[in-house]
Length: 222
Length: 130
Image (cartoon, each protein chain N blue to C red):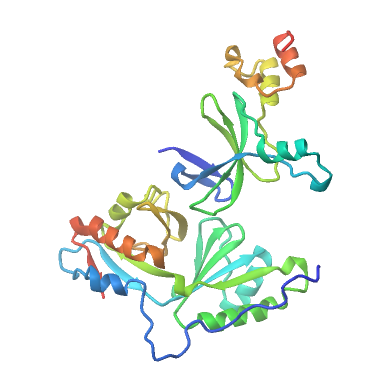
């Protein structure tokens, strides 16, 4: 390996204790656009799960799987466009591309998790096989949940991807086009859809979903 | 809906998710310093524009964001196959031309599939000088 190889990485807590309150990417939208209340008529309910820990893992599947299994207790998804979760569904890993996975854990865990993963993976300089990257992208994206009998109909209006239960079974997750923006669409359970949005698209997608959901009396669960 | 098969996602995806990136299988000269201006210019700027079978580089831009190759017919716009970078194409102008010799190809009269093939192949297919 050449001498130019980077032998360091920045590992720091991106969310330190501070006087300045952290805000969800949708905080501005809530003030500007508002939050329609959930009512008896609501056939779609939107719920934001802000401030979760998002990590991007890159590298070889075999090496990463070993480390992730040791640290989190469950492995990487084996097939493209699928996700794995722990028993209570709090932590998940999603396939994004042949050498890229998205790990989502409860907010606050990501800093420690990154450290433990780096420890488990050992020194990346050891062998060429062990080249990997872990990037904390928690600040760059947020997660929105859609639930209700018409959630699938709302998605059908917004994305060209086939969301029929036959084409989109539970445990699947894809990166696709949504209202001309792009996002990660996933289905961790029978009734619930998750949308992982970029911060910069959050307001646009939020307003799109409210508009598309108006006919189903969409409500935002605060 | 126009669906393209992504060899990395291993499923058909909407065309909107993809971008074409030009001709595939362009090999960078091993030693650029040793190239003549003409060779370097050809490598940098000159691309094939065949009528018929063309191998192209595409990217699954809104998906796995990986590059892959597409074999496409520039006359009918039909995508014949997609394959990962580093793999050889299964369908080429020459393979279609030899299929024609064996009577496998039904669109033989149009002559499209000989475009891009070598003169020798065309000669055996057509029985005439190309």
